[in-house]
Length: 202
Image (cartoon, rainbow, N blue to C red):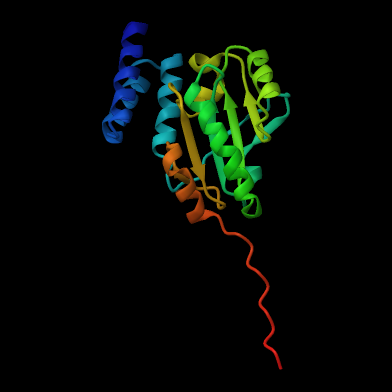
């Protein structure tokens, strides 16, 4: 019943996620929710369960932008969306952001929208990085960092990098997509506007 036991179970669940054994991970998360109700670990486990079970479903995801404005994922209905959790200490995340800039430009006509979720310990760290390395899309932030921010708990994010892909109907296509697969999956769901039909010559 100790907090250390809850953390150990979270690590076991995460290791099963890395092994792509989602059913085993879900069993550990369910055990945490049952045995440690009302704890941070339980909230993380509930969020991770939501994320792992989200493919093919819509998710309720809300927060505040780094500037303090309210955000609701449902307001982006009709557009494909990439959610990227990132931090200034995550080199892989920063590499992924370079790719996201390219994809944002390439699929602009299809309405591709990127939502960054920063999990740095301080807002100033994130703002300082974005000032030097512009990433022109929505960025969410909440105090607490990766360990305890509500944004991390909502989807049970314990480690970085992590990206999710959502189609224009609001349904999750992938609950943890890798950069190498991202463009191919976006191409499948992004519908560029059709060119007007040409009139036959008379």
